[in-house]
Image 1: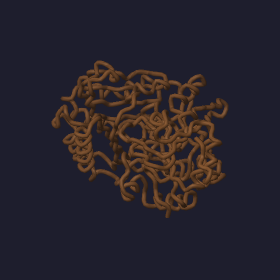
Image 2: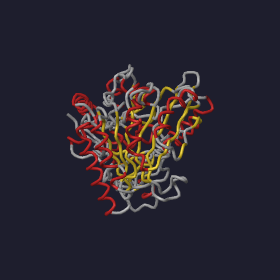
Image 3: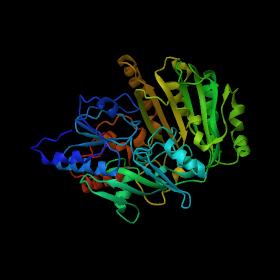
Image 4: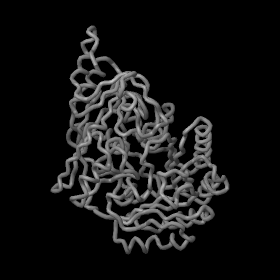
Length: 462
C-alpha cells in the first residue's frame, strides 16, 4: 500500500514485511475473520504482522496518527466487532522455542496451544492449556488463562516469567518482576489494555500424560448427576479437575458418534496423577447412574482436546460466564430449572457448564497479578450458536435468564476471557475487583493515555 504523500507518518506502514490491507483488497476478508464468526470486523487498515518489527512499526504509525488499535491471533475471543481503526493480526507469528534445561518456552504472539504441544511433547513437557489447543496462547494468558488442570497448577498467568511487549507509544519493552514490574502485573490478568505482546516466556510442567476424558449420561439422569457431582467435588483432592455440563449437540459431522445429535449430561475429568488413583476417585460418579458413553482414559497430554471435545471449526458463538461463591441446593435447582430436561431438547444453548474451582486456583500468585477469580469455588459458563437472527435472539434470551437465575450465588464478577460481548463500563469492570480495576485504569493512563487500545474488554484511562 502506498502512503499518501501529505501524511509522512503513514510511511511507517511501508516498513512492514507482512500484508497491509484495506477494505476491498482481495485478502482483506480472510485476514480480519476470526474463529468466532458472530462478530464481523471492518477495520480501516489490517496489518498481518510477521514479527516483532512489524508490530513496532504498526504501533508507531498508530501512535503518530492517533489511530485506535485492536489485536487478533486466532479470534476465539472475537466477541465484539472491530470497526474502523487498525487491526494487527499475529497469526503468522507462531514460533515456539523450548528450553528443556530450564523447562521454559518462548512463545510468539500468534502461536496456538497446539504449536506449544508439538514443541514440548518430545521433551515430556507441557504448558497450562485451556479446553482447546486451537486457542492462542498469548490472548488466553493475558486474560489469566484458566487451565484444564488449574486446580492442580493454578492459572497460566502464574507461570509467566516475562513478556516482550510494544506499548502504545511504539516502544518495545521487556516486562518481568524486576523490569517494568507494574507493566508485568497488568499484563497478567489485565488482558490487552497496556500493550501488544509479541512474545512471552513461561514455565513448563514435566507432564507427558494425564488421566482424563468425559463421562456421558442420557438426559434423564441430569438432576441426579448434578447433585452427585456437586457432593463429589467437596471430597476430591486439589489435583482433581472436573466440569459438569448439560450438552445439546447438533447432528453435524464435527461431533463424533454416538454423541452427535444427543442431549447429554457430562462430567469432564482431568487428573495429572496415577491412573489407578484417578479411577478410584471417579468411581462414585460412575456408580451414580448408568454411564452411556465413557471416554475417560490415560492419554498423552498433547491429546488434551479429547477431554472437552470443543469445536475445531469457526462458528458464530455467544459465550458468557459467572464466578460463583458456592453451589448450595437452591443454586443447583436454579441451574436445572434453566438448563435441564424440563426446558426441552430445543433449548438454544449448546452447552451450560459448572466448573470446579479452588485448589491451586485459590492460591495467591507467586508474583502478584491482576487475576481476580481466586475466591470462586465454582464457575459457570455457557455457549450458544447463533447462525441466524431468530436463533440469535433465542440464545440471547436464554443466556440472560440463566445468569439472572444464578446471580444470587455469584461473586458479582466474571473472567475476562469468557465474559462475552463487553457492555458499558460497569459491565466491563465486573472482570476485576474494584481495587484491581482502579489500578488497571491507573496503568492504562500511564501506558496508553490516548486510549488507543480501546476495543473489546478495554478499561478507560483514569
